[in-house]
Image 1 (cartoon, helix red, strand yellow):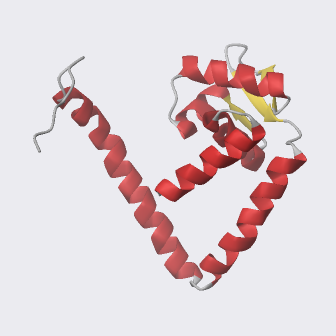
Image 2: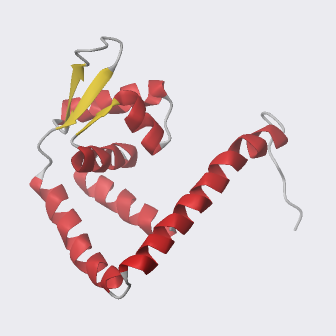
Length: 144
């Protein structure tokens, strides 16, 4: 998993964008459109942090923001044309990832996806407990 994070960081640095913005671009590219709230939830950001990320994406030309015609309180974020460098990097990575998954049956991949979702659900439920158990504003020192 750490390698995935390192790859995202490297691509973001190459494109001179924040890694969070790159992840948002990826979600938008796949979905086409999302509400700001959906995008924030997918990435794990607060709505305030997502607003700042969307501002950066708009300035970079990676996304467009529109008001939901049915609910003016909602913001719809649309994927804009992504830089050819990003698309090339993404395609190059996919060329190497596809053979990895091609060794598995659809059933095995479904099991992997289900397992990953179950693990994500466990961690999502444990985060609030973990946060409550730590002392506020105090450093934790480990004994060697």
